[in-house]
Amino acid sequence: MNIKESIESVQKSFRADSDPFPNDSQSIEDLRIKYLGRRGLVADLFSGMKDVPVEGRPLAGKLLNELKQEIGSAFDSQVDLSKSGAPNKGESDYSLPGLSFPIGHIHPLQQIMDDIKSIFMDIGFSVAYGPEIDDDFHNFSALNFPPEHPARDMQDTFFIDPQTVLRTHTSNVQIHLMEEKDPPLRYIIPGRVYRNEAISFKSYCLFHQVEGLYVDKFVSFADQKGILEYFVKRMFGSDTKMRFRPSYFPFTEPSAEVDIWSEKRGQWLEILGCGMVDPEVFKSVDIDSNDWHGFAFGMGVERICMLKYGIDDIRLLYQGDMRFLEQF
Image (cartoon, rainbow, N blue to C red; front, side, top):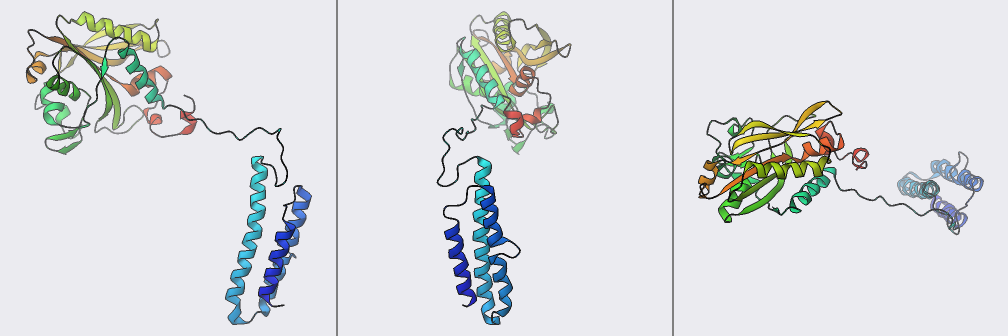
């Protein structure tokens, strides 16, 4: 019997012995020793390679390695089945629990974004979206940013070309809305924004904002205060303490920032900026500020998410770590 016939004989013998595959550990071990042991049938075949003519060794070696791989794979498959709790061939245990399938989760940022939209839609706001790549006019000039403002610097903004940027805020959509629609307007504008910032535990090169715009006749800062107070109580709880603190933004006047009190940290934490739409902004979109008034506000979704869930590192929201995401 030549080496090729010997290999085929061992192959047929193994296939007969492993159909069905043994289902107890001792029988499996006996089968393994018979074929893969140090003195097993496969080892004997390798020992016989010295008697194979030189010109026949490449083919014989290939066939022998394929046989060893086939037998080894059969044992590996049986080990995998044992670990998974699946029944052996010819055996079924219907008392075992079924295989569990992982259930996905909505990302915490998307949860917060959905909550914000739901809160404002409940009080009559519509949702609008706009371009993430925009021109200087809509991102800066129409919003009353002076030419020397730091936000126009390449250190803070991603420029596509001298007149085109990755938007630095969703406020650019305010301008598009007021150009395309006649007042009254009541919109929130969610979306991604981009800043040329170093990545750290508290900052990232992209994040999400929700902008709000309300334009109508006889609108006052008191209206804005009431709406934002409603939002804070819905988002963080009815017992949440909040305050309005004077601030400055180029596109609103007067302007303010809203803080909430953190019992855990024992300090006030800023959550959003707001103010009455500056007449210069109305002028840039041909709306008469004598007839129409409005307010705007903007909040960082990541910041709201981190405060609500007690997250202390913004990078966790972007790393895709399932150990973190499965908590939500």
